[in-house]
Amino acid sequence: MEQKLHTPEGVRDIYHTECKKKLAVQEKLHRTLHLYGYQDIQTPTFEYFDVFRKEIGTIASKELYKFFDREGNTLVLRPDITPSIARAAATLFEEEDSPIRLCYVGNTFINHSSYQGRLKENTQLGAELIGVDSIEADAEMLAMLVDGLKSVGLTEFQVNIGHVDFIRGLMDATGLKDEAIEELHTLITNRNYFGVEEILDREGTTEDVKAAFRILPELMGGIEALEKAGKIAPDAAAKRAVARLLRIYQILMHYGVEQYLSFDMSMSGSYMYYTGIVFRAYTYGTGDAVVRGGRYNQLLEKFGKSTPSIGFAIIVDELTSALSRQKISIETKHLHLIVHTDSTLRWAISLAKEFRSKGYCTEILKRSASDGKERFLDYGKRMQAVSMLYLQEDGTIEMVNFRTGKEKLVQAGKQAQ
Image (cartoon, rainbow, N blue to C red; front, side, top):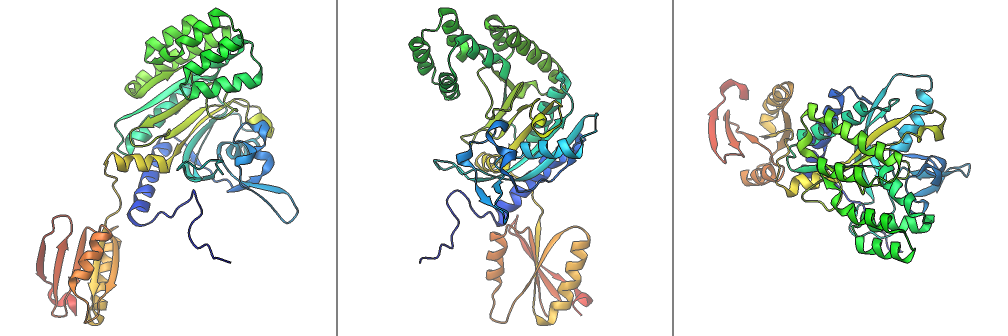
């Protein structure tokens, strides 16, 4: 039987420079969440199947990685961290009536039925604000998201905002059954408005409802998109949704982030548990959203605590890839090399201790008599080191600056002893 020693389809190894950059992006994003007062929480990588059952409204069962424990219980690798946070918050903060601000970083696992180049394991970094249903909370989430994306150097991005109640109002006005509604959702998500019109014609939908759906492609952009949406809102809930988005936008102007915002009133969210505002962030260099989020006021009820909530998840792998393709430099901790021989080991250790005490990442490398300096220069370039100290037995140091390519000889004197 052939041994499979490579990674399975949909997962990959991340190492060296790419890994450093990814961790640096996570660190900057994480710091932004901490600046807003969010506290860390870690939930298990796998949970009981019930945490992600169909009624929760997350990933379809066929796309879950399932396995069994010794007692025969069905377990799943988490496909989405929000239900895990909801479960934990409902039990750990059962009596808490003040807002709870939580943030996390962890990997999710989705067994996509068709691979199409998508990773099956992704790192998500996100935040959840539990216990408050207000326009101020919605605005805080969006402002924090914008600040986070800016903190990693992203300048060209857009956060699209919608509201579940608006698109749901339009769907309800059609009078169609669940199967046709699901088909409409898929077509709208794919921007196939010709397909939408075909279904409405086929089902004999009224002309005023058809007219409202024809305007959907125009309900994207700034405040003018909200104004148009308000005119075709089919019921009271849809009208309240438009009014709420307008008030949120007014608050976000105080945060000074309105230039990154855009409305998309056709959005319904990627998870069924969303109940209010939904949003996604997009940028160049990736074919999918780098952030998904929204309000989920009824999710915690399924775990025993009735309280409103809102949150988002940043897909770190997508974001890091986009930064790389946009050639945005990601600041990482600098690596310094010290190359020594047997007789200069003590000296190398002394220098390394001094460097590390100052917070410099320092790697010690031993060279033999047959090793040439070129070998270590090549290694330093591959590792993207910033400098190299090449210790000589006569007490001198050849100093190499990888950024400038310059080298110089320094007399170290008694330090070599």
